[in-house]
Image (cartoon, rainbow, N blue to C red; front, side, top):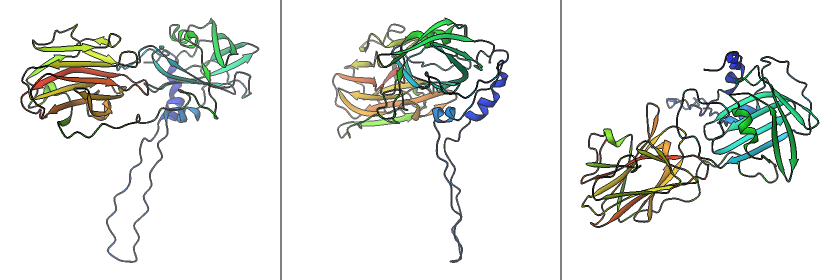
Length: 356
């Protein structure tokens, strides 16, 4: 729930509703040669940032300032180096400084800010007097006024807080955590534009093994793996004969491990006589791209959330079969090109392919 007074966010919410894809009407073929099928229309998807640029602040507690250009005007971005948000929450803390792409714009009295990993956004009013900027009419703290000094030096925007209690001081922590890089249309830097939909490269076509990709949580399949090893062996030790290793900077999350650019892999190794080995990717809608390697060879890559969905969870089971007996390692890596996390739940082992 929003703080008291935030119900006036409704105009912003209304402007933030977008059509992700347009429907194409199916028409019955005409039986007479003189009839022409009605033309179909497809809506063009609009990004969250593009939609935010069309929105205007609401005068929650203060009048809107005049739409005047200031020396601060421009778009700026930063890549927060800390781990990105990987969990779902129904009322996440606003302005929490999490890892990934942040973008902020000051434009003729309107401040817009966007976090690409979760699509969180806000909009507010601002005024500039010399090296001081005042921020107000933020829907997440409509009664608060943030005061900062600002400076542009070395092609970096620095904001230093004088006073700002918005979102339990989280806005101040976010704005001042690191410098912001100005965005240029001629030479856009990372963060200034939306990342591509997919990373470069494709998985090598496999002829020696079979790869099965199954939507959903393999723990509840009709024909599930005979044995599971948790991705976080520090929480639950793996069964005898199975070793699970991980990058030391990957994040423990219960029995799962969260992969990100700072800790980007987890793997399971065994020489037990299983004929199928798989890995379960499972988590929130914020998860990103991963690849799976079998004995050092990439056998799959894709977007975690595209594997499937059940309730509020996304993911699926990637299984390798058809290999010769011996020691084998299944490894998952986060591609991290867009700073989205990957959450690995478990590795599965069996003597028959899994079936949903």
